[in-house]
Image 1: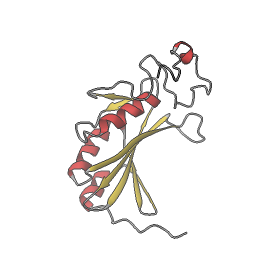
Image 2: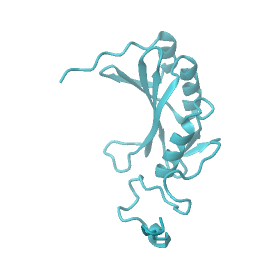
Image 3: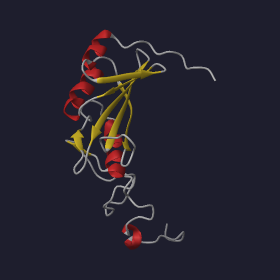
Image 4: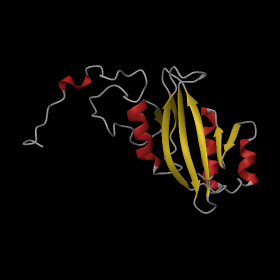
Length: 168
């Protein structure tokens, strides 16, 4: 297997914004860890510097992960369509109320991505215009991709109506 083509280096104006942050690179992919309080400002600056595409917003639950000091790792995958660069921005959050400002004002397409993370992991995006369930029913009170959610559920499904092929 061959290594992928190397990515262009990040422009100095962007790299300077990462001073003092945890930055790493592997096979041409740059990753930066940002404190939650600085995340929105940095993401907005990256958008202004040419990272015009928000590829994805996802989350990792590090519960009982060896060496992990924080519970949730929120991941923003960014791309510069003009410069061909990619960037991973990570923000770590903890219980009891994991929350971060929304980036819908920076990338309008983040609305559905943030709703999915809210629905599956329970990360609240403050200032989100429509933060409600996307995949699970509104009556579902848990967040099923959290590692402390039992495989058999907590009895949430016992009162959901059963649909048959004739009714559906």
